[in-house]
Image (cartoon, rainbow, N blue to C red; front, side, top):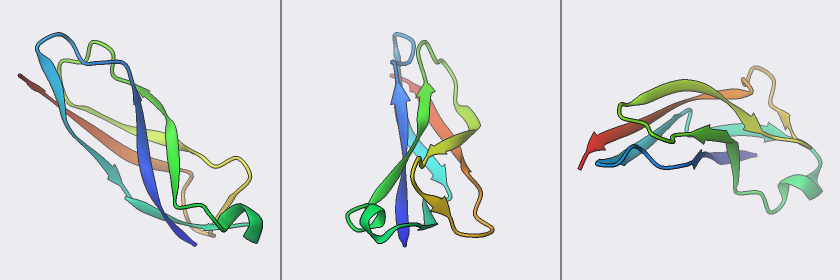
Length: 88
């Protein structure tokens, strides 16, 4: 099953800055697992990304939260996330 990946952020950028956008690559992944686990699943989340006090764009590789699920062979357990921060 193919599901969307959602980046989870915690905190707020530095005063005077805002999150302009969040890019996740890949934006969806292919999972396999028990039908009961996949049936209502529409997205998976990343581990939390702390953006507290951020003043510039953050780029990184972030693990996925996929406790009872298996990734399809050849699919990585991390995604690239870019949190674009701009001055207000």
